[in-house]
Image 1 (cartoon, rainbow, N blue to C red):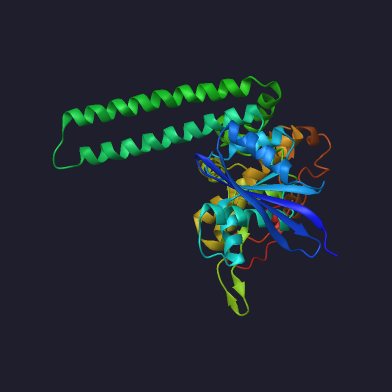
Image 2 (cartoon, rainbow, N blue to C red):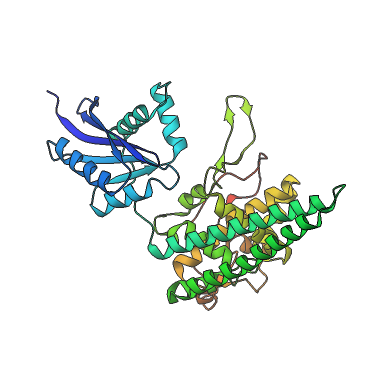
Length: 386
């Protein structure tokens, strides 16, 4: 005898409307579409959706709603459901697309997408979504605005360079370009001050940021961007999750006798990778250990500078995560260690110097080396921080 075991609801979102599909799954894992409906993407539509859900919940069963992250249009409905204690999961568009393809759905429209999301909600156990803290949400808007201003400045500088080197120069155009660049530079300085003021408004965050900024090459903007994009690392249980979220996880290409190149996935938060790029250059330039040692090892092995810098990106991110969680200040290792001892003690924090580097400050993390060559160096000496 079949009986229902779970409800799954898929919601496809656009700017003005929500397409919802209510699915039921029984103990034979058969998924049946019970109802579909279209709602407006506003508060009245959200309330209608809530009543529609209650109408079709005939039994007290496990319920999960799946929403595809479509720009910023999903945020209002997701927050509404969260506040009303209705479990909701947010998935990335590429994951939804791959799932639809796996189901053999060739056509694409709002109704089909919502039914596919509803089937996913019924079949899979997904992580429940939680909104960002207001403090970090504001910080994220500020850091992304700062990033956009920097990109705009680069864009206008490139245009100005092209105009100055063209066959004809129009003084009025050059004047306007210079004024635009001056305005953007002014806004950049103002935005930086606002970010700094926002960080200083929270004593705990301010202290943690100052501790991390002791790493030469890692500044206020770098730390602010990373904690804003990760919501203060609240939802990350381990380093692997963080590395994957930032797109630094290694993707292998191997099957049978075929051995392709291994590379980072880049399927993650691009804002984090962007801000760590310049920090890695400065950190290596000023010979900050253990980052410069990692860079030299990877470069000696691959003869590709960028692979060395990417490895430093990853290690910087791990250090920031660890120092943030432990609320400890970074302190580079001053003493010289024998080669075998240096491999297992890459740096010390203030509270551990007195203990003569006796305990590890980061959990063991292993992973494939970020290049296609087989390494005879232990993984711990490349990616593991102790």
